[in-house]
Image (cartoon, rainbow, N blue to C red):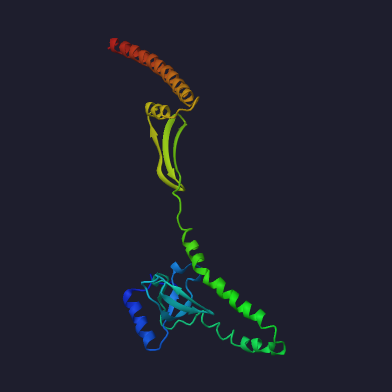
Length: 227
């Protein structure tokens, strides 16, 4: 059951009129109520909102506790799942309480047991506040990667599991500038070594191409003279 966003001012006024007419309107606990969200109870009283923000007194199960309008929403019509239904089960316990008539000194124990759950229930509102405090989440980490493979430098960016920028090719000079920003011993030397190796290979290939071009031009000159 999805609860709403809380009771509006008009809904609070409608509940006040229903209580004045002798009715006990049903409400459902919203996500703001924490662990009991989605359960259903009955409004039995509205206290002074000037005294406390939690002025809507709701009965659910054996408990009657105050809540703020943000913790509640009007229960949809036809709702059959209610927390109030377990009430008939405690009623058969009334004879069990009357049973200790055989020993007059024992009523102290059941009296204490009945009071202890009430103390625990009144401490539940702070527990609801603790659930709300767990919501904040941190931002995913950002990773920027500069890589070298197959004679090409590439840059990629990723935040968490989401790729912000797929690997794209950058010039060797740009890669060297990026590495210069990283003050880590050995990194810039490794990049310069890779660039030096590429430079030497490119110069050798250029010399080879120049020699081949010179042979082609000489052959072309011979063919021209043969005309």
